[in-house]
Length: 438
Image 1 (cartoon, rainbow, N blue to C red):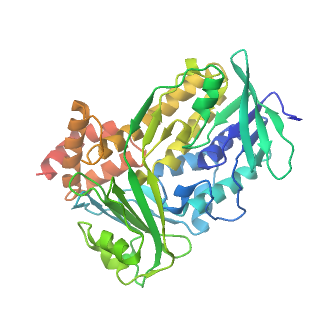
Image 2: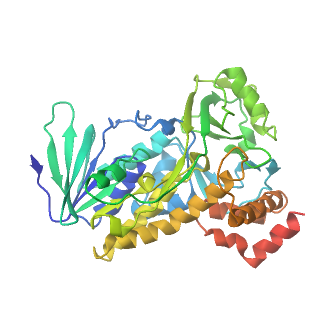
């Protein structure tokens, strides 16, 4: 059957964070929005089977918070009321970057710690409450229909005995995640695949939850051990909404963090600062832990000329980041505001305008993370002159941030998507870096 839809109907493929954010952006402009997902969407804040990375540490960056609040006013306050922990990204979290402890001060950069399950469940609840949004789970998109270079709808195979249907659409947004079939689907329709940039990061994560004895970190909400060429192992621990502390460890290549209690703690003990080990050596584990591996990160460079005129790839379907940097949800939120603003300006050359705006945020985040991954000797890849210069400067920033909190604040404003990377090259910041890094 064909689902009745208005001339302003939109379909979003995927009901993860990216798809929900896209739906929030579309809801204020399109007459109706249908969100389709193959997974079973839980009614409570529990991890989903199709989102294995959800069990590991997550955070909302300041830029992502601002974008979510712009799309769904009140979202951040409601998330905090549900138990998420807010605080200053430098004043409330201890950071050690490649062995250098960042000097502390109030940076004015807000961060939020919460489980991915809580953030996604609350986002789904808010989006589902929008009167013109329909979220349908246990539904597989099997084919796309195109006429004269324009998308007309999607064919959907439902489970649990629900008959298949064709959902007509004037706009299709593909937010089906890292495993997106968008390239294959478009190729089947005769569209050229986009050029891709890949980095074989080969990162493995191991996560366990603990209960800490009070006082908890003297009031701090987290400890971050960020990787660098001298200390490539990384980890983060932070408080969760249920009062437990999540600890995610990460290693590159063959350096796989163990899950057993002794091995997990030995990995923590190897960090260049003792803070995390001191907090965990008397903590009580509450689970056996889970592991997740990211073999590659992928950046697909779509061109509007090689897309149906009303089809948009979105979020991880365009770019899947190394999750160690915590950028995925926040970049998707910024993309959603770009999508909304483009639609407010009309449908003419929509794909071209959306990709141009989205790429501005994606490129900055991609270059920042890839450059840092290429600082790690175990990560293969060409170190161009630009990358070598950027990483030499990054090492100076690491050293400078240990003695000058203004440098650390400037760096966090970039990683939290508040400032462009070029902000770190302002003369005043460069002078601070050169003086302090000595």
